[in-house]
Image 1 (cartoon, rainbow, N blue to C red):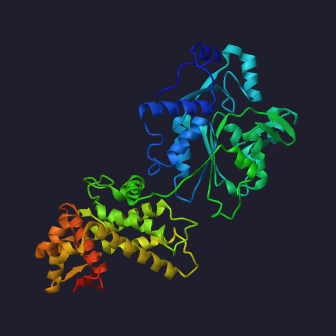
Image 2 (tube, rainbow, N blue to C red; image 1 turned 60 degrees about the vertical axis):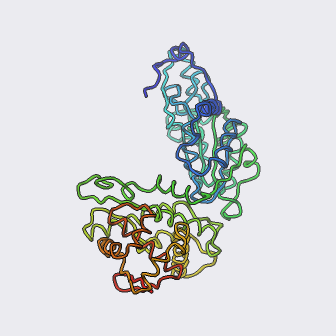
Image 3 (cartoon, rainbow, N blue to C red; image 1 turned 180 degrees about the horizontal axis):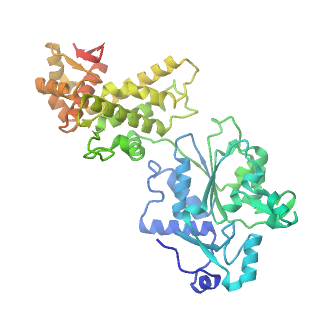
Length: 478
């Protein structure tokens, strides 16, 4: 959408536009969303009854926010999504660095332009995306980065040090009339945190001993890991006191939410379900991920968050789930290309591939070698698989299928076994087809093969079938 037509201060005044603070602006836009029944933060899942109501309260109360939580809990995404509560366009004095309000400019240059040009002062329209700034707190950040510093180039041009026009403003002043986010706030040196006190409360900024009054208009968001997790630093008490709301984020409470996030965030080229595949080319492979495989991926993360062998202080990010889904899809595509099959579906025999995408994202409770880390992941994968299987089937319902194997039937499957082999096995054992029908995998050979391996592995993990690993495959039998 194009911005409003006003190009001068006089035109803006005639249009009836009025000034309001960024917190008033966000509050009004949130109330309008609530009236229309629209979600606060589209795309943020699992927080509808916990985090989002607290954010709504903070915005309506005009409070700055600390988001406290472990890694991978959408803290940064929440902060960036709040930009949607800003007006689409905001008028500012043209040519200034601080997005000065045309009716109440705060920078020396803005005041000068309005004083000299009057009603003819030029107006620029700023989009909501340009009113957001984000900074990752690191120990090397200086006051100059956040607040400002005397610009030696401007001094060399002939201005006096006492002239405010010699100042090069930092991120905070440049985000005037917008949202400023500082991630991992405890990592910010305490002496720099002290420098934020006046910015957040009194708006009194000191640069090189000069006292400059800047009535900054900001909505400030900080993110941090819980104090019992990070030992790298802390938030000083006076600064923490200036944030109106501290909101705890959390991981998805159930596998269904984890799957929804996984489906939303996984790379499209890896998980596409369309004719012609993810890239749309003639030779692309169409990927279908059966529901039970998604459940296993989500269950793996859920189990890791409860495991005594995995450090819960560092957490198990949702990024583990997303990366594992992408890895499984990649393994399925690789097999389909090698075997010349038009479609691909992840199988149980692909699960070892996720060890690489899981091990690097979790921390064990006690230090150990890499082999032990792999064993922990493999054990969790087995538990995840049997849990999902037992949610879909009761062993009492599998009696006839088990009897077929007791009568001498056997199944040769594996990572690079063609889907047609699995299909022939289904035709040979009708009980296997009936069980797969309950999984609703469809008729695609690759999906049927995925269902076959899931059933066989579930029976093995429930100690109803033996499993022998052989070169290039696995044999299930009694």
